[in-house]
Image (tube, rainbow, N blue to C red):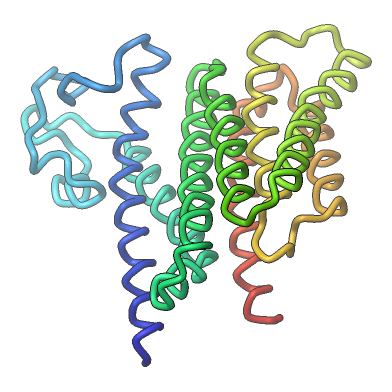
Length: 281
């Protein structure tokens, strides 16, 4: 094993651990935002007895396992979903890191010109993943959706593309990429809306916000997916078609709450597929 491989393994390992820790924070986001509570302050506590949790109670994954899925103080069961979200976030961060080996290579080469935009792209993709996980679980729990998540994806994507354009000296191409991203994202709102309204009458503000969030996320993946493997119209159109059909079939049914989970699963599959293609080609 050479130094480059070892450095890459360290990068992937750290990213995965960071994802697991961030998954613990997302559990807070998923619970507090629908409850109109702040996510920047306040101690975590047991939902049953109200006891403030200590440091040893908040170690991602391990605390739940060692405590046997029960509160240390009142012995009430703790839902396994907290552990599952931490594991899922860690998996997403792992796959994202595996798709960004160029970051470690640029670090070793000392190439500062492309390191900053590539690292910015990497961080933006992780931010998108966190927004998707938050949206899918909030929608699953409450059938609610919030504007801040798609706006975070949209604004961060636009900013990072501008950064890339500045570093490579091609602002026109960056603006073109942003415009295409916005158009594709709008399609993820407009097409399901038109189809649903043609068949049904109910399309609420929550539907709009949810489609906006998932549309920006799926567009992100189809537009920026590693060495142009997925950055083609033949990826975007099938995604949009599939999303519209499933959205129509599940509208106002008990299965609708799984739409966010389905979208997150598609993103994970695209990430995994890009790794396979990377080694094939």
